[in-house]
Amino acid sequence: MANPIEANIDSVLAQMRQMRAQAGSQLGNSIPSLDRANPSGPNESEFTSVLGEALNKVNELQMDSGARTNAYVSGESTDLVGTMIASQKASLGFQALVATRNRVVSAYQDIMNMPI
Image (cartoon, rainbow, N blue to C red):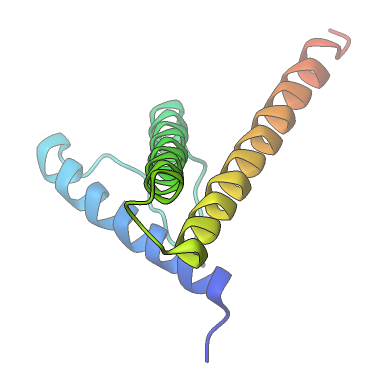
């Protein structure tokens, strides 16, 4: 059985390849490769796109968690396990997003503090 993290990474890469193929047909295949074996440097628009998708996913997780929590508290649902899992997914997603932001800010500060 494959590692779940690697499976998720492969899934995201497959989605990105599919989007690349769609965009490449419109742009004349000028988009760099996203293969794990042969990575090429991502450009700014790819980074922005991936970061935007991550923000949207975290937002979806938080909205789902809030909806499930409200449904459980109001008595519309008795799925405590599903509610707690949704809450943990939202929490982990937010923590990962904050960690990513902190790393990007730290990298920016390191670059800005480099002597010329």
